[in-house]
Length: 80
Image 1 (spheres, helix red, strand yellow):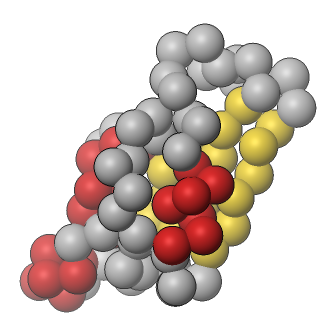
Image 2 (cartoon, rainbow, N blue to C red; image 1 turned 90 degrees about the vertical axis):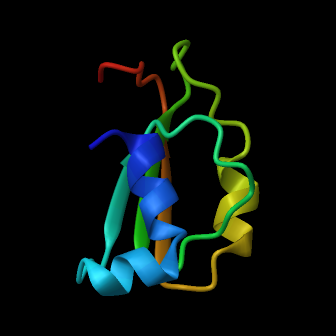
């Protein structure tokens, strides 16, 4: 599952309950549409990622009330 899809699912409380999903990982998620995660989540991005726009991760991170981690790795590209 891709990062955008994992975050979209994490933001859907009903789906996470129905599928018994307790946490999510979203690596280089791109546009998140300011929808906070409803389950614990780990966001990761890289300062040299030129494939996805990760500029809105800090806002979604702020909105998420569940346990969360955001790592923006210095020098990391989209592929690592």
